[in-house]
Length: 288
Image (cartoon, rainbow, N blue to C red; front, side, top):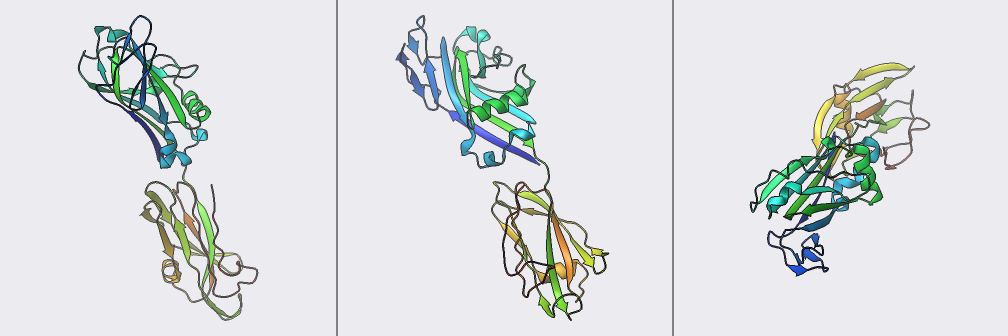
């Protein structure tokens, strides 16, 4: 499964103006000049800085450096103000990152354009380097652009492939005459919760374990979607139907795959399962 985190910065096409050495704020962008170009905010001989903050993205809590990156796309909306745009550049404002000039130098002057840059295709912009900058900045990536354009919008999308997760839950359903379990009727409900920021794919099946270490029937895998922050419940009727519908209590496991983070199955028992199951209703979380 692909997890994508996004951070943005925005400003005006016509930022405020000022004079060196003062800086000018253009929304999320900070514009500075130099002694040779007194006016600031006109898009000539200036540096524009901003910070991509990924902490506001709900998906960022599931983003991990251990999974690397499958893509890193920088999108800029800018208006070149001088023919010397051919010398313009953008880079991550951290040690080790080189200047990126490629798609910028061919942009027309005084025309607002939107460009995309594949960072992983640029020298020095390795997944490890980008993730290290993200980690050292506590979820923030500083950027800098120079020097003959007005930046009005910026966006950085980072994506990584996450593995599928699998969980097994034991439960017992049906009536016991006392041969294996204590006499009584047993019921189990299994809840699967998606606490993540987006809809996930889910596969589940039921497998029956028979006495004397024999294998019983297993249901077909059922695929479904579970939207963000929602839950599903597999109760006795669905479980027994999927696993063959017998009346004898069975030890059955459910397998849930392609989960983003964790699922909290709940297994309330109608009666004591002795040593074969837990007592009472004890919800718990399984983390990956």
